[in-house]
Every structure is written in structure tokens, then in C-alpha cells.
Length: 345
Image 1 (spheres, rainbow, N blue to C red):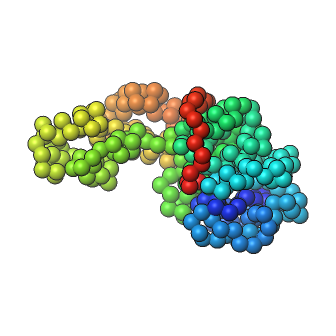
Image 2 (cartoon, helix red, strand yellow):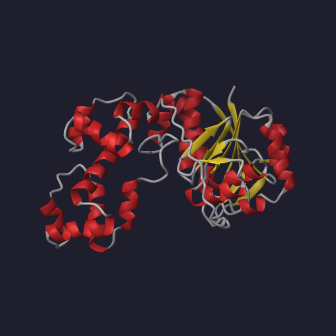
Image 3 (cartoon, one colour):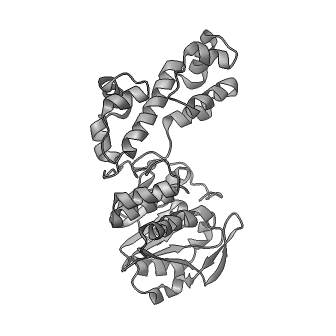
């Protein structure tokens, strides 16, 4: 029997929080040639629902009438700025509590976690949301163990994810659990996704954080390095490309990024090797991987992994590869004043 999947939408929800996971399940149907999933969009009533970007969605059922759909397998709540209003609706919260006793999987994308939290459905569980709102979720709901940096988290049948595109990662993980890594990989390729990111991976890369801190000519150089990290970038050539001396380039790296050009390039290449590692169906041999990204040999790659990630490449693959079972157990402890939810999902 097809899995019945319902996504809950509402006025001012984030469009991609709905369409991203929906397309994963729809593509699984198309690529398999079978109806693996029966998809429904629920809202206050059947009909048009305006998203936060103004593009309407068409709901086929009311959330108050979900029982008419028969047994549900998965219920996902979209995020978006409209969640603020939805949290104040006792009837909707009660309906979610009722469904939580029946569905196999209950989850959310981005700030949709706040609706589940308001209903008390994440108490005693790990959960995550968009990085900008993790502190607020932890402050407002201390019974939830917030994982502040994960892409998505599974905890006792509750599935929560970070912002927007992480909802696609979550849907791919649900698809993989249902029908295996081969079909999930086919869907990821069909959607032109670089890889299926495990939930325990960080919402942000340290190298990308550094790239965002760079300014002026250095930012332009970093953009070129990120576009082709495997090229033979020599110090003199990098300096010449932005019209400075090698000494001045090193000074810019120290001043803006607190590192050296060589160390930055090594870290950038190491991240590419890490992404290639976790994207492989089988753990690849380290020697060619190290040569591909100019990281010396297999032993040097092992040392770099240990230094930067605190784990060997083989253990990293076991934890974060396609068949890994990564989970993060950090909890948010910020006591900052909880902001209101802005416009993102």
C-alpha cells in the first residue's frame, strides 16, 4: 500500500518547505514507476493557500478532516512566518496531538517545529530548526533537547529539520528508510542535488563562514578558489590575480580570516574530500581521494581528518555515509532574549 504523506500548509508558510519535500516523494513515484506515496496538502480548508512569497498552493483537504484520508503514515508541518499565528490556535494544536497518536512519523520543516513544540509533541525529544531560531526554541521550550546545528534530527518518531533545503534532506532520508538508498540516490540525482546530506552534518561549513567574512579583493579570490578548489593554486598566482604581492596576500588572510592562504586552501580541499567521501555508496580508497584534492597521500588525509573533524575517514564514513546513523546530542543553552520569528522558513 502507498504511504500516505500529508504536508500541513497555512497562510504565509514557506513555499519551499512544502514543495521541496513534496517533490522528493513525487519523484520517487515517477522514478519507481509505482505509487509509493499518496500525497495530500492540508490547510484550514480545501482550496488556495497563499505562501510567504505570494505564490498560492492548492490544498486538497482540511486539517480538521484528516480522518477522511484513512490511516496516515507521515505528517509534516511546513515552516514560515505564518507559524506565529498558527501557534495560537487551540483547535489546530489539539488536532496535531490527536494525529500524533496515530501517524507513524510526525515531523516539521524549519520553524514548523514551533507548532509541534507548542502542542507539546517535542517534549522529551531532540529537535532542531533553522539556526537563527534554535535559541528561541530552547528558551521557550526547555523540555526539548535542541540540537542547534544539525540539518535534521530523528527522535522517537519525531522528525525535525533546519531551514528550507534541509526539508529536502529530511524527505530523502525518509524515502531511504522506506525504499532504500538506491532509489533515494536516484531521486537526489534527478533533482540535481550534489549529495544526500546526513542529518548530523552542520547547517554551515566553517569554510563558507570564512568566505562570508572576507571583503573586497580577498572575497573575489575566495570565490575563485571555491569555484575550482582542485586547481593548482600557487601563492604567487593567487596574489597576482588580485593585484597584490604574496606578502600582502598573506597579510590579508591573517587580518580577515586569521589563517594563511595555504591553510585556507587545505581546509577548502579537505571539505571537498569529506563531501566526496560521504556521497560515495562505498567507502572510497583514500590514496586517489587525497591525490584528487592535492592533500598528499592517504596517511596525510587521515591526519587532516583527525585534526579537523576529530575522527578518522573510515569512522566518519561509517557515521555520515549513505548507510550511517549519525545523530547529534548537543543541546542549546543560550539565554538570549527570544526574538519573534522573521520571514524565513
